[in-house]
Image (cartoon, rainbow, N blue to C red):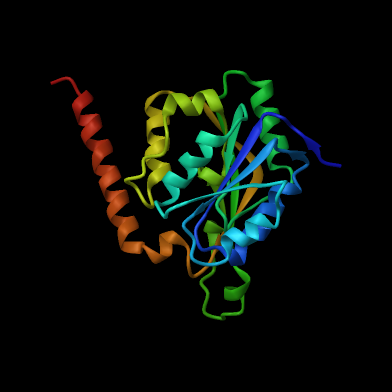
Length: 233
C-alpha cells in the first residue's frame, strides 16, 4: 500500500501532450511512497492537456501560463512547491512505481547527497511500435539517467543552483546540471531503473532537432570558454 511522504513536491510541465499526460500522472499517483503534492503546469497548451490534468483534481494542482517553454514551466512549479524535495516528470514520460521510495532512501541515509538519479529505459510509444522500420534502440535502451525526470533533489540544493534558464528550449536541463557540477553539488546515480522515457513523433528534441543541435553546441562552447578562463597563463 502506498504511503504519503510529506516532503516531496512533483512538478509536471505539459505542452500539448493530452495523449500521454494521464499515464504520466498515474505513474506518480501509484508510487509506493506518495508525494505531498503534484503540480501540473499547463504551458499554454492548445489541445486538451489542461482538461486531462483537471480530471485528477484534488489529487493534482493544475496551473496555467502562456507558452514560455519547459524551463519557465518548471520554474513556475518550483515557485508554487512546498516540499523539501523536488522531483520533475515530463508529461510524456513515466516513473516506475518505487522511484521516489528508492531515491528518498538514498537521500535520507546519506545527508551529504544533494540529488539522486537512476537508470532510464527508453521505449517506443504505442503509435510507433507497429512501424517495422523503427531502429533497434540497442545500447540506448537503458541509460544512466542524468535526466530531469530521473532526479530527486533537496529543495535547498536546488535553490543554491538556481532556476532553469528559459533562454534554453532544449538544453535547459544540461545547462542547469552544468551549474550544479561547477558548484560541486554531490549527486548519485542509482543502479535501479527509475524512469521510462517515451520516444514518439512529437518529442521536443525530435521536432526541434536543429535547435537542439545549436543549443548543445552553444552550451559546449560556453563550457570550453569557462574552462579557458580558469587556466592560469
